[in-house]
Image (cartoon, rainbow, N blue to C red; front, side):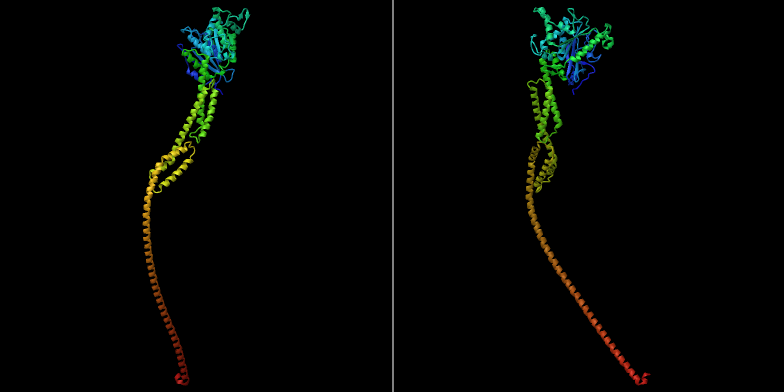
Length: 586
């Protein structure tokens, strides 16, 4: 949605200090912010004729533009008041109140003509405010500007009678609204009542004739008729009693003349409903930013002593607008690329796709904001800038990839480089270990994401830079390997001799052990034989003792048997004796 600007009070747009015009930057910033189409209503007239009062009413306010009741001009330069259009949504009504013409404090009317011309050039509706009636002085004053054909004509021509396309004129010049203040005459011509518009048309009617006096009379009227094909006239009664005019802006409507209040209402209603959007040749609709550029173009030209024609103004505006459109397009491109691109991009194609998408949007922004780029010079300029942007983003992508990859290699290979410095690989077989570790780190490097398009090139450059290190490690490895080989051979021989000695010693130990074992066995056998002998002897002795015991027992048994037998015999003999000899028995 277009931005709507609300100004609580008017401010000076073009300062007039010592009859030198200067643009107010603060006012330009306000205009720059207005993206809506603008309806520009400017009012010009003699000082102290109530111009500011009408402009305040158009703003819907009683106060705003300075209204005074003294003989000194209050408004200096051109003041601006931007308000929402009361009838047209999404439009801004721009009111321009100008410094009063004919100020007696000025040295001449040059400054008046400059302000008059600026109001004409900037407005879409031009209110010419005069007092009492349309007279020759008011017509001559209007003609003082319109006769400057280089200023007001869109095409250079001195032929005032040349027929122009009304549509073209309408796009070049504002509509004219002639306001007659404190009008006290009767609206009659030749005894017939007429409307204010008929009164205006009659006042601007040229006379027929070819003498110089008729030409002098008709020339201003022809100019006005030519440059203002659409005209409207309003008459205003005296607003109040003369004594109350000093407080005009504070008077409520019920203290004003009813006819005056009604006339002001009709005037405002007409302006709101009939004033057109400010346009330029070719139907170019003016917004706040374009109006700002017109202000700068016209004021700069006038301040430099030139009187710009509308053709040049449109050309200057086109240059400003198209230059601004190029900048907007580039800013949009930068914004889109800034949001979408995170350097380094993984592939060049991915980056180019984002560039082309942002480029298309940038061209759309340019086409939307540009106009009258007839030879497409600004579009070509944009394309050149976008090509440069592409080259720059590709260069920055390459640099970002290179920087990122270099930092990544430093992190990954840093421990390896430190190990090399510490001599960890300065040993036989160190080169193979170094190569093996390098391959492991390369694999780790390849696994890292978002390295960009310089990944392989940066790696190869790094590896190339480390070839001398690898070669030095290889030479050290080879030298140490040869020495190690000799040491190994000597070590093998020593170990073989040692093994042989150990073998012989083992044999000796084995033989000694065998001899010791044989001796032990022998001794054991001897001991066993001794034990066996002793056992046998003991057994023999035991057997002998047993035999002796058996013999003794046998002898004892025999003896006992013999003893018992002898005893028995003795007893038997005794008994026999006894039986035979009783004395024996006694």
